[in-house]
Length: 295
Image: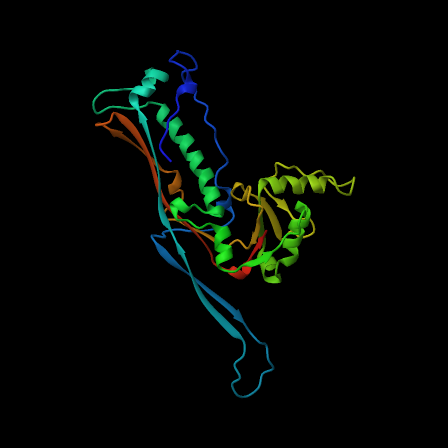
């Protein structure tokens, strides 16, 4: 996609509201608050897994080993991702508040607009990272948790045709293993399914039950506090839900928060301001038997 900057909506330069620029801030990468973040991943790192079962036996002379130990090694691979934008000084001079801009050899700056533009980019990046975490991004070579779940053959729950949000969530909860429940489970859904779930619950029995707020960040599954229902933007329009223990899903990066660190550069040859963000990211599933994909 070619880099484009549309300033026509700003109107010609008029000295009014000169300190205001309204940016469309989007909800950030919420998923990262509920999964395992693996730092200092430079390229490819091992995710070591050991699952042990023991047998309690009556004590007796001799040696009779029983039980099992399963050693598995999975991998998480990260890829370098960049965001680049450019802004021509003369375009800005025509359309925006030029008192805030300075143009002198070696001292070029967009003034307070630099921070406002950067903040807008950062919010947009957060939204794209949230989507990438779940759905992947082929341009960035990141697979995403939905593809990761299919790759490791995670348990799949098939939703019945026309199933309601309540029926879908109930079906996933019914498939949770005792081991998952003992650790606690995050059940990720889209905001659309979350809204439907809340409306269905509020419209059902009984009159003395408190109304659930659809603006809630999370909900505890009714009847089992070990299950937390979490709406995320990354699952929007996928028709899927994912239940997992907190350490089963892994997001790998080099430095935490690097996707929000930016740089401004001045291109003397082109008379352009350059904006750049660079970070590494990747996803993987550490414990396939602690992930359930509903679709």
